Image 1 (cartoon, rainbow over the protein chains, first blue to last red):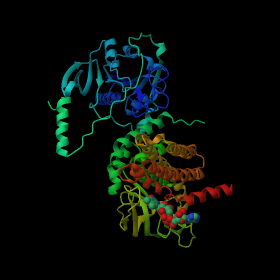
Image 2 (cartoon, protein in one colour; image 1 turned 45 degrees about the vertical axis):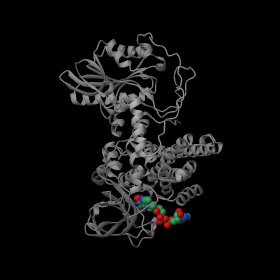
Image 3 (cartoon, chains in turn yellow, brown; image 1 turned 120 degrees about the vertical axis):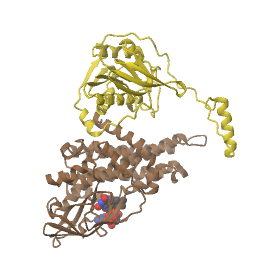
Image 4 (tube, rainbow over the protein chains, first blue to last red; image 1 turned 90 degrees about the horizontal axis):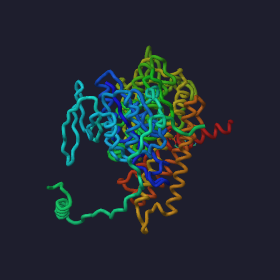
Length: 257
Length: 382
Ligand SMILES: Cc1cc2nc3c(=O)[nH]c(=O)nc-3n(C[C@H](O)[C@H](O)[C@H](O)COP(=O)(O)OP(=O)(O)OC[C@H]3O[C@@H](n4cnc5c(N)ncnc54)[C@H](O)[C@@H]3O)c2cc1C
């Protein structure tokens, strides 16, 4: 089985963000970077599938600037066999179609049986790259998966629907899956595996060496949301506060309907 | 010169940080309150992550990483739980490292391997009631009897005591020799007849790290459990502590950063006189000094680790790192409490625990006075 997992490096969400001089993205200076959370689920699921299937290969791919190599190293330490770095110092200016396009250019020749991506990136949050990649490779795609099992070329997944409902989907390989919180608990890369990953191959390909894809979406402006008013604090006797809370929940939400 | 971490080092730091924040932080205050050592969390989990033998080669059961990776690990653990930091530091630097430095191949196979793999926990017992800063005052005795050494005496203040399976114990093997001579190092296993535990100390800080008395009463150990040359135990202890000080320096650096981060979060949120207290110049000056001291401590600690990795002498540098980082930890934690005002004095905020935890770093593995003696002596001798 040949597996691809696509990952992205994103800023730690605890960071204090500033808007970049361009006005269309955040400033990258002084940020701490880490592997996109949804991609951790994708890597973990890919590693499990790789371990279960025994033979084959798990390739981890990231499109991004130099530092994205750290995210690739992490996935290698978690169990991926080799890495591909589509080097693009300007990746933050690319739209999802361009990102998916570049990945498709690479992936087309490799004939992967399974592709995992995160549901979305924690910074841009477009949730488009996985689906577009499937489209460009003419593969079926199942999004938002929270359970995955595989038997003889047939994959059964559960995917999350609105309001907590789950759908069970069966799909024949090759196919692409986008991974959601709840799918698994990603392993920590152990120190010995971190050291071993040093010896694994990472191939770097400049995106400028791949056929260029035009953008379909352009970011006009990035801005912080207006400050919201402070939350409501209920005070008084417990039973009275509880009654008021129930009233508010009934009036403003659907949780008690 | 390059001040950046390499990719492996930054991944190790990230991994340990994630582990510490997700798994250690939630129970740190409660374990402190209950004076409870949670072995499954504070040691077994570290073993699963491959962190119990960081600096030892794979052939010895370690991960083959460098001292800087070790420092980063203890630092990240100590940011949220200084007790876990010292558990690992005592295990690696004080118990496993002397086996690595002075053990025979057979001793390494039998004792170092399981320590490095984290199957066993280690401890180091040098201090006695009459031998604190002056280890030459060691009174615990070791006499030969056939194929055995027979140990008698008490050791106090043993970190990981009671919990550990493997103990490095120092005893006087030659009564006639003066002071520093005539002391030898021994490997003693938990469960050996004649080896029992005394009281568990009740402490100001690092309360979820157990500190116990060890009692040797005609405790017979095989002759082969002598570690290093006979009569050279003082040298074994001093070499061991040179490395250990890097671990404690890293612990102190971690505590300082934990307190700093907590104070910064608090100061940005807490409003008085209609604005966040972080906007007051008096508070900003505190942060300036804290940040400066942490950065200076970090450079000293990382430099000592770098020297150890480069195979250069590092005794003086590790003493400087330990001295400066520990005094930084106390100052920074103290200011962090001050920035919290009255809330900083309560158990509800972590800086109260961090201030208590910081204090020990100025005392164990050589008090600040002893570090100054080491540094001053080396400077004057030239
Ligand atoms: C929580 C905890 C954990 C510990 N863990 C371990 C462990 O795992 N293994 C172990 O062997 N020990 C351990 N220790 C012991 C620790 O290393 C000693 O407490 C420390 O070395 C100081 O010795 P002492 O307490 O006897 O103080 P003393 O040596 O009596 O010192 C008292 C004071 O006199 C000063 N002083 C002493 N000599 C001089 C001098 N020549 N010049 C100037 N000032 C001097 C000291 O700096 C100090 O201020 C631990 C202690 C504690 C509290």
